[in-house]
Length: 514
Image 1 (cartoon, rainbow, N blue to C red):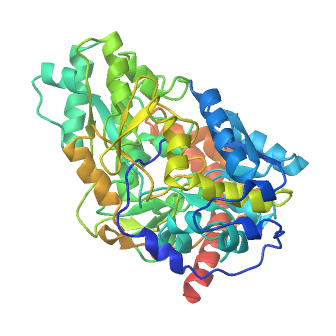
Image 2: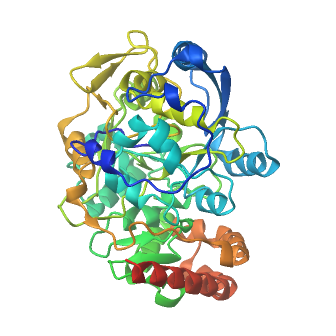
Image 3: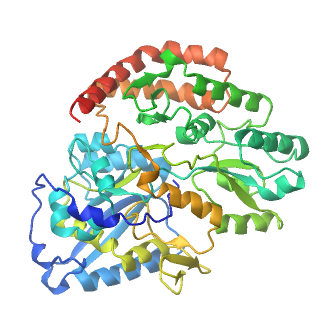
């Protein structure tokens, strides 16, 4: 799961005026030790070990960095942390089991694309207003007011929002060296991108021109293209992750049903990607491939992949050059940086939550506050300064030979403390800085809205099973839309209509109260 890596300027102090409400019932035994710097008097605190569950895998420096984290925590607040990393493929199932069984967990990662709304509605997470007020000054001040306002669930805070921009970075990574060998100009439009892909097919038979994602509908080719099309401002309703079967369009407060509308922009993209598949531009294994697209590209097997970044990470080019000495990647950005063209609901994709059954809620928030101080944030994300990374200027960094910490987007990512890689090129920086400014976006009318799937939970589960048979195939070109869209509609239309009706009812209620 990719994450934004750029700083939002001049907004953090707005969070200091947040209106906090709702009591969590958390104990206050550590209250006298908290202070605005995030530090505590360790001698006055009982020893506590916090159990933290987040997605991802252990990096090369995990043990040494965690040891330094626990050394600092022991000295400052008599606390230790145990971090359990869960593979993304197992995240949904394992975290469901952990929460349902009452396993001893204090802090757990969740997200709208996982099961945040459902778990919050079922009472698994602590409401955080009181804890933030007592123990979270750094958590508050490192996130702008827009972020807090937009990421509540039914008016309450059930997770600390994690993010540092108002939309996700998106681009298509292509091979610059191959483009130049083909005497093609820099790619600026989708038509130019397709010209590059067809040229790869015709001149490099050993390399697959394009592969999109099938496991996560976010990365399907149609989804990828439609999110950057500001002429229609189509976006998912998040009833089923990034599915566009129910979608918002423009800013009219309506939930549209693709079975009913056969939205022309979405449908034309479906037809377009079908042609790419038939023409053997799209990978013929797009639905069955289990290797990450990035890994395939770095192995010289694929020439273009959708990635959640505006620029090429240095390690990507370094790894590619181990396979192709003259190989080089570049980013094709189809994102429109015209101010006001893009809508934003200021929602974050990832959250860290305190589990309701935790016996250490106070200490969990104190730890999050500790993690949202610059020196500790740097340690958790980058590793040990001078060993894994080094500081450059006011808010940049350079990687060293063994760059890397433990966590970032899973635990404490925010707009204020993020550092920018010192080698970021000017064009990438321009795009990154654009999405870091709230005033560049038009406010989505749905800002602050969260769909409660409980009234139609059976229909949502039923539709997910149906959608899994057709969606990725249609939106990646592997299934003939003339044949399979009819089948998809026959199986899913009635169920989806029930979900749409409930969604629109909740939307209407939300808008009526604004």
